[in-house]
Every structure is written in structure tokens, then in C-alpha cells.
Length: 194
Image: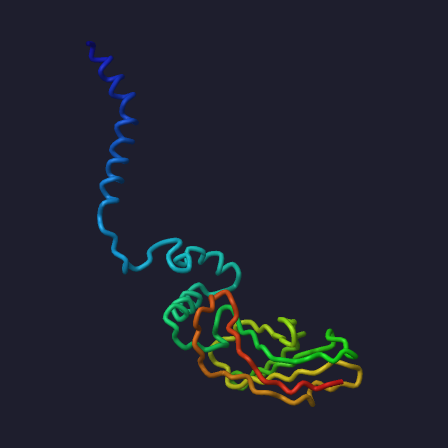
């Protein structure tokens, strides 16, 4: 047998030999015990292992805050509701009278933070029968006080005179809420009727 024939045969057989070695290594490694309490590593670990941090930055969110929120959710620890990356969903019960247009329902939220006051006007969204919700974005951990007033926007309505209900700002348990979903805070509100 010539030397060239041996080299050509080895060269052509090399991919099959490598594939056989890889399959044997996989087969041997499957027999080892797996550690069940290993920390998650890499993409797909927990909440994608923060692999999409660039996408979070481009969306204007802080990936580190999202990681902290995910840790709080897994550990069922208390978090500041206004510092949650997914925001806050204020929920309340209200039966709209048949003679009133529900699209006129309006919520006026006043947020006080370090001597600064912000006023937000939102149209509550229906969450089901007699259930309504008002979604708020993430504000940060320094909210001193927050109130909500709900009424019907009509020509003679004065939203500044609507009765204000305090929004709880105390830390709450994150529970199973995903960081991309809002934390739900139920609020009892006296609705100002038209």
C-alpha cells in the first residue's frame, strides 16, 4: 500500500472518527449525576439570564433593575411598587350606570416625589365585569405620596374637586409577578358620578 493512499484514507475517515468520539463523549457524560441546585448560567437561565440586556437598554429600561425585580419575584421579597420595571396596575370596582357612557370615566393621579408634583390623567380600562384598572409606568423608589381620583369627564366636571384616595406606597410582596408585568394594587375609590 502506498503512503499517499494511507494519508487519503485517513483524511477521508477523519470526520467519521471525530463524530464517533463526540457521540461517545456525550454517551459517557449522560451517565453522570446532575446537580439539581446549580445556579442558572447563561441565556435561558431564569429569566433569559439577562441575555437581552441590549434590547432592554434600547427600550429605555435598566437591565440591572429588571434583574433585581426578577430576584425579588423568585425570592418572594417585598419591593417598592413604584420601582417595579413593569409598572403598577391600580385596580378598583365600579358598576357603570346604564345611562352613562363608560368612555367618559377618567382617573386623575397625583404623584409627589421630593417636593415635585406630577399629575397624570388616564382613562381606566375594563378588566371584566365591574372591574377597572389604571396602568402606571415605573416612577422610581422615591415616591413620597400618591393619590387617585376617579370620575366622569363632562362639560361641568371639575376633576380637581373629585375626592382623592391615597395609593399605597408601602413595599409589597412581588410574588409570582413577572418583571415585565405590572404589580397589581387594589384601591377602594369613591367614584364621582356625573
